[in-house]
Image 1 (cartoon, rainbow, N blue to C red):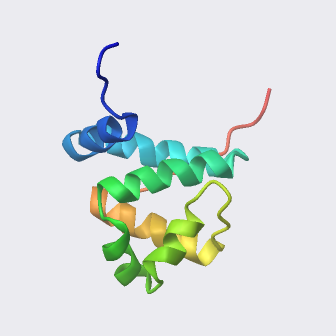
Image 2: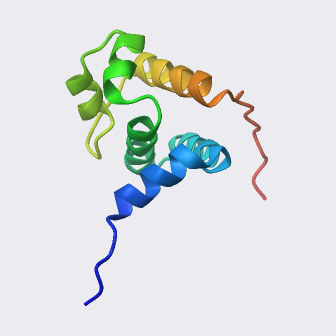
Length: 107
């Protein structure tokens, strides 16, 4: 059997080396939240935080313990809107992107 690389390592390296990929993951996390898939969104955000700002720096930025942030961004986490907004703001600044949300009428 061939030795394979851990999937998380691959994602982490790609986020660190590909700005467009990191931005796309942030966009996907936001879309998942807005479309009713918060569990998956939190896990995407967790990978993004791990690979960009890190939980220790994020804790300082949002004034919350890093362990609390780890729990918030777990599959069963339940971040408040205030905490989620702070997390998005830190990632927005780290990735140097702006958010633009559009509502689309269902057909």
